[in-house]
Image: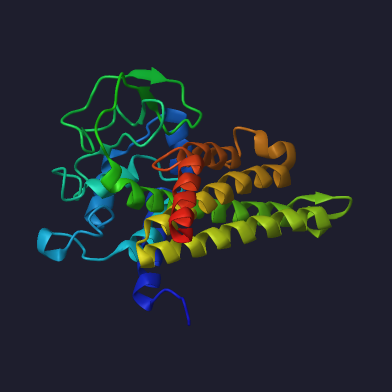
Length: 299
């Protein structure tokens, strides 16, 4: 069996990468970090016009009419570019919240533990909630993921959890693959003892392990997108979180002291990966779901 994207899917991925490279390249990313603007409304509308949020809406409802396999390809590219904002929640809200599909509305969700909500001040709506509640700002670990703590979050988003976890896993995979690129490039440029550090076995092993984790996670994400199975989506999120977090840590190690500086982008990948690991389905929740499925199958 040949499990490969179709020509149309490859074209879709290439188109999204080109759009993000031109509209949200490294200079735009660093400008967002410097200014603290987490959601660029102009870019959000452009994403809406490109079909980013309406990708899975049927054509009869004004959408693109594609499915989860195409959505994970698009979200992988967004993760690679470290595109900020409640991308997953707004995508899930397409067809439910007015303006979400077109990108004229920013929609967030109660997808974090502990009463935390990301992008609350930037949001026009909260998925499944009758309005936007008030919240107290919390100092975030990621400079482009502002957080607020709300008194209570009684609104149920369980019907969106599986798809939300899978799309977040795709973001993690994109980030993990990007840190592999950053590590390999730096290992080829940085010289020590008269040769590139990539010639040293320890650095080779780090980069190889990063690639293996990222590719295994990507395969799991693609497979879960095809089957639509909640258990496989949970497993994909578990693998993608590990690939993104450990990959960013290993990338920091390859960069040495340079990786910890504000000028490098590696720390941004690590901080975003930490936040995403707590969104939609945590490692503990994924493990519990998978354990329950194994128990049911054994009975």
